[in-house]
Length: 166
Image: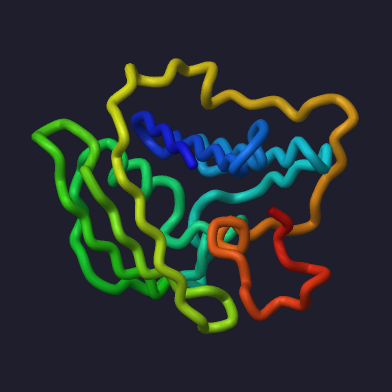
């Protein structure tokens, strides 16, 4: 997984399989998210911020894109639980740099919890504005729903025919 952030709520998340190209690309900007699933030639678009009930963004990102953008840009928000049930621990980098490590205990919609750990591998130059202006490729079909947590931490109790393939 790679994550890029820029001021405001601009966030880009790329998920990669062990072999091959991008499995999922999510771009958030201006309160909206666009997720592309190239292998399925499909996309999802909607809100990238928590709903009024305190749940995740429309695609299952607890606390929403603006929170994670601040974390990735090196701002250290208050730790602890929030309404989305996400506990976040941050090991800060040097002043003005992204954190060295972020651990987040995230609540799934079904009440189970998942642990996500992000480690900073390197520092890259800031992503240009074009990285946060995605377009829906011609021939892609809309998805009704998308849950980023299910892709990051697959449901190990799912039937074998629904489990993620290697």
